[in-house]
Length: 311
Length: 311
Picture 1: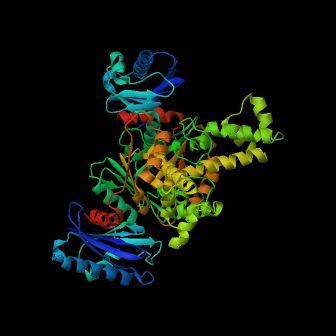
Picture 2: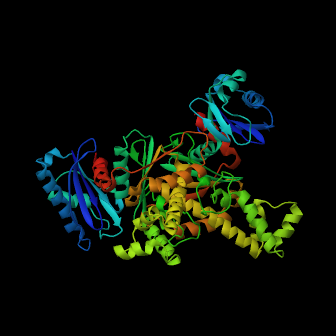
Picture 3: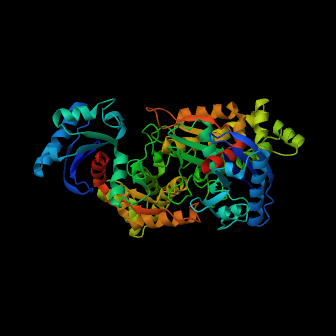
């Protein structure tokens, strides 16, 4: 039995996970990310302690704690190098955690954890596996031969920052035209707003007014209700997603590419146009093809994957 | 001692290679690619036999023969699946070779062989290594943990067919905007010709008239002689090359990316602007950085790498 912790900018989510990757019990507390690192880590450890008690277990039943962090970590030492939205620079997270709850702590990047979680959920049989997460950004995690692929320095799998449109939209990373700037939900919302302005007659405007905001679902829902401008947004967005997947497939030829993130809940409404584009544009015409699937664990991938990283 | 064979559309090049990757002796014969597969393979075996005799060795001194093929192969069975410019479909190359010269034969993709050759030449110490070959197309080979990375189906590392410009130039692979359609020497020649037309005053026009053709060197040589339009071609081409390298680095974080192909002989004239762009645009700002180098073996990479694949 392991503990998996998904440290996010808004919440700290944690769960007890069986050796086989089953989520047994979970809970969360707010991150309150303006606080100092020590307080955040103490809350992580206390939440873990409560989960153990709640499940009727003892600390010595837990073989390890995995923590998925939104940024760069040094998994060999358990130190956080730099997080994007939380003040934790060059910080000994593992050491700090064990002051409150003395269980071995393993620190990993959150996208890597999610990839490991989805890999385990997909059956652990795949020779090679990639998870692409369409969210605020585009995250990616790579599992080769059952192990996370991290590059020589631990910083690999930033596939969201491969170029899709040379010289295109400015990305947060400093480069222009990154896949993330077209295929993230943030980008989809931007594309939706542009279409709403260009098509004042589109039902997307009424939908957004009613709900009080434009979301990643606005275009999908209006497209399903027959709105033409919304259908165009969905189609173009699916092609941006698909074109990046084709690039990854051409480079890696992984056995499975899993598409995750909230927008993957659109299921076939996203996957069908994505597959149509991929089948037309993939390089590999002779050998077995990469399987493209939608993620299974959704929000629990981070918790389960962090636990599997500790395993 | 091994034999390495680089099967090209124009020539069959072969060499005797030491266990450590030193080229001992080499020779070549024309491929005459319109011939049937059996005749081409017999010539490969006969050329190998002559090299062994020329070096004063015996067939039993050779531990294996590696053959690098321009296309898709099944390295597990020694069969060629499909080659781009030579008629060899679903063909038992290893079996056919051994009818003439009975030494174990190992069949591999030529870009993979070149990557393995440059990896060995770089010292074999790198945790992860990529060779990007800028030629008629853009080839790529990936070595992880000392072994070729092939994907689950043997068809990986087609990085030339990741997208650089979404919806851009039509690529031979069927997709639009591939890196290869901007960063290959074929693309550089196209870009040079476009600049020559737009700038009739450019010395590139006189240079091409004198030599009877536009080549990958035209823009580089005229730029060095002070031609402004040529300098712009070189700068833009270097940025296309660099942007693709940044994408690969962001995805893989390999310890070394080596840039090969004839155009890599331009050395610092290519590498300096490439590095300037990479340093400005790479995602990784906190961890150790990928080393970008130019290839060492040039034309011999295929022979040496094929031998190392057999090793």
